[in-house]
Image (tube, rainbow, N blue to C red; front, side):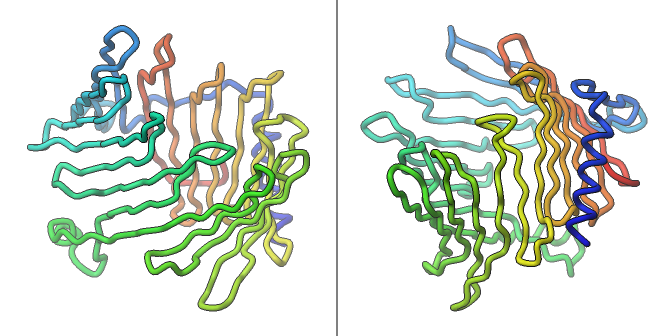
Length: 315
């Protein structure tokens, strides 16, 4: 029954908007946030960028925030540091990059304005490119049993640390296993191929000594060799996730995605290879968000706009 409902839901999304492909509509009267971007270059090297974010109510700007980021490079021209500071912060936040002797990125650190290392990624390189082999994330812990303001003021942090292990055969990734900080396996994905393309991915979770197959994802390359449609089924053959792409010749113009048995969904609009609009839904929270994106001629992001509203029916 779940499978039938989610397929009907997605088909309605796709067929209902086929006549409006590339005609993303953003209702400016509902806009609640807007961010404008500007950049400074030295020849082709980015020196700094600025973001000005506005909060809007009833068509009027009620608040704004300016964030400036400066970029530093080493003698080989490799990006080494991003220094970002918002107008309400006393100290900047940092992003640090570390490279090996071959100029390949090996690690990335994010340090908050409070001095906490909120992200630490380590990378290794495989036949199909760079992949994350270690990640540690520091997040603020909010006690929902406390008053929200008090909980935010009482700084408590949670640490999430994982290690990813990849196995290859004949240059193809056959599996990826995720381990927790105690080296216990958490999740695993096994891949099956046909002519070097992933045809099936099996998602497995670990519970003590038990392995549980959560879902199996199937890929369809009939429309595109690089951007396949896909769907996943659980062990009861119910549809968990689904993605349908629409193209104009070889250019993607619309991507419709549904996740977690239809509880979450995205509709992404493209123009000239760039994402120009996004509509997201969260049925659990009865929440709908619409975002719009515009760009400078060189492809840099120029402006984003968004608004939120109560979810009524579908996308």
